[in-house]
Length: 293
Image (cartoon, rainbow, N blue to C red; front, side):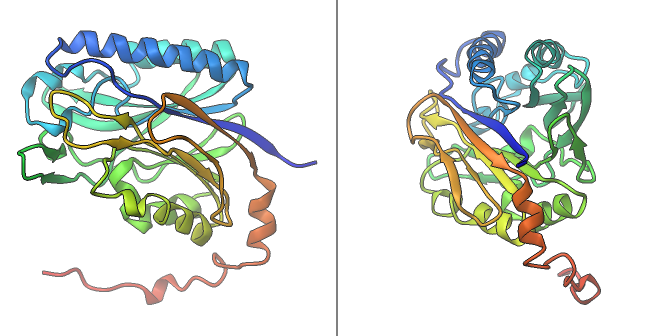
C-alpha cells in the first residue's frame, strides 16, 4: 500500500498598504490564513506550509524600525499559540514562517513546526540572509531585520512524514537540501518571497534539481502580486510540489490567492534510492576546500 500524504502550500497577496499600522498587518494576514487552513482541512490536507514571513508584508523592501514590532517570541507568542490550536483542531501539521523576536533587539526569520496534535516540535531559523538593493532604493534588506540562524538543520518527525525547512534565499545553497536529506527528511519545504526579474529563471530549475540530487520531495511557495508602497517587483506565485524525479506534481498560478495541493507518494523515495545510490556513493572526504580569504 502506497504511503501517500496530501500536502498544501499557501500563496497569497498581502492586501494592506505598508503604511498601515503593524498590528493591522498581522491581524489581516492571520485572518486570511485561517480561511486557508479551513479550506485545507476540508480538502484533507495533512501538512500545510505558509509562505515566508506570512504574518505581514515583505517589509524587507525598506529599512524601517517600525517592522521590529511585527516580531514575536517563538513558540510563546500569540501566533504560534493560535496555530497550535488550529493544528490540533484539524489534525494537521503546520509549518508557520514568521518574524521571531529572540530577545529585544535580536530577530530571526523563522519557521515554527507544529504537529497534528498541536505539539510544538521546534523551529528553523533562516541561515543565509541576503542584503541587496535595487536601482530605485528598494530591495532585499534582510540583514537590517534578521540575524543569521544557526539551527543545525533540524528534521521534524511529524505524525505523517519527516520534514525539513529552509527559507527562501537558502534554496540557492545546495548544502541546505543535502544536510536535510542526510538527516532523514522526506519532504523539504521552502517558503519564499521572491520577485520577477531576480530569481524567476531559477524558480523551477534549482529545487527540482535538488529533489533529484537528494531523492526527496520539495514544496516551494511564493507570494503573489505587488505590495505597496514599495512595488519593488511582482511576487510571481507559481508555488509547486516536485517529486524525487524532479517532476512538478502540483503547481499554482502566477497571480491568484490559492491553496496548492499535492499528493506525495513517499514510497517513491525508497524505490528511487535503491536505483540511484547517491547517498552510498558520496565521497565527503574528497569535497573539502579551504575557504577563500
